[in-house]
Figure (cartoon, helix red, strand yellow):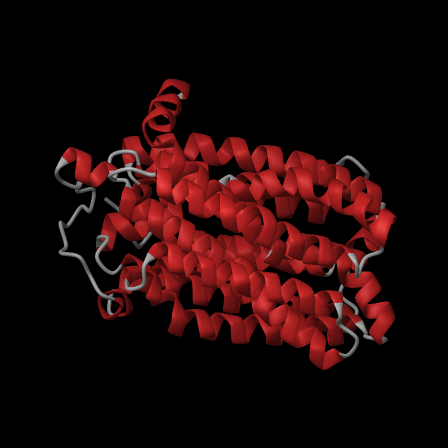
Length: 403
């Protein structure tokens, strides 16, 4: 496995580093990063759990709808231009968070963070990896996707330090400066260094689609019942993890876990996410993403059921280990699956559809979690409810892309 990753890195390192870096900087719009500002935002604006969750959900929902309309541009615009536009968007979003002082400005800032950070940054990276690579598509997606666990391991502790030095709101100014001063010039340099794609070097694309379906459009996907059967399971990890992270204050209080303990568990979560992604990347190239799909929800179900049943400080590490495994598998399998099944000609448009659905699902979870919390549900019951959802998704997925 290690030799395979070394070989592909040696041959295509500029594009792989670009993918990794782009996904990493997209973390500034991910729920695990924004969640660390939830308590001070609620305190500053006087928001309840459901009100904050609803604001987050509205911003994320609009973001998802916008991605569905805009995400396909990655198939049409020059890559460097597209990267510049999304970097400037994320830079502006960070400045808005720096100056946020009302519910309206919060929703606008959250929308832009989710749209450019959670949405377009990883969407661009994964579309490029899927199109640029063929034989090593699983490994390339895994390498780029590891920008998320890398952020999960590094950013929480670093953020705690920055907040202690400059305050929670001024920390967004630091984020803005890093985006415009570090990410954008580095991304352009890497794209300039990237040579011909693996597809071009090999002269043909390795066809992994079992039915040998011609490159399909978004309409092809929407008409495919297999897509709808697999979708609940594919959306489950992001939906559940977003809800847990955004409403972490309630869960930590109920379970008796301190903020410091939860921050430490992120190191475990990120490390497991990273390892699971690397292993899954190799397995995808060997067996195909379609064959691995049916195993996707098993770790997620196990972690949620375990945390919903047992109490104690050590339970958080078991839960985060299982969640990290499930998230690591999801990113690699899902991003390789669309290229395998539907081809790469319309990959940006297809991914924008899937990304939009994923973003909309993460929009629903904070509000739904908030409503259940305000209605008096216990943390254990909440976790078991999510475990039951994963189990249903697993049953449906076994009827979808079986090869």
